[in-house]
Length: 67
Image 1 (cartoon, rainbow, N blue to C red):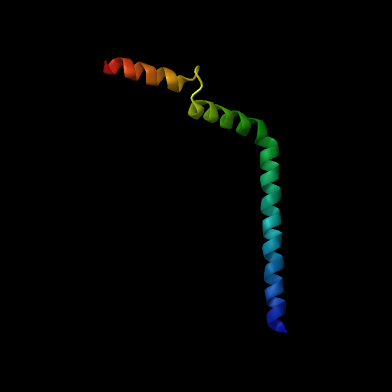
Image 2 (cartoon, rainbow, N blue to C red):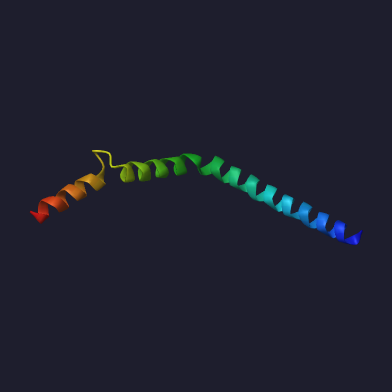
């Protein structure tokens, strides 16, 4: 009987810790959400290869220098 109590207590402690971490993550994303979204958008634009991105300009200049 003691074993099941200790096991149950450990599980409850684990669930409490997971809940605290989840609440902290939600709070952080709430505070810094706009900044994170802007930075991720910039990274996606650069990696996606939009025509107006700085990456395409650098690549085009590099290819011209090879000729």
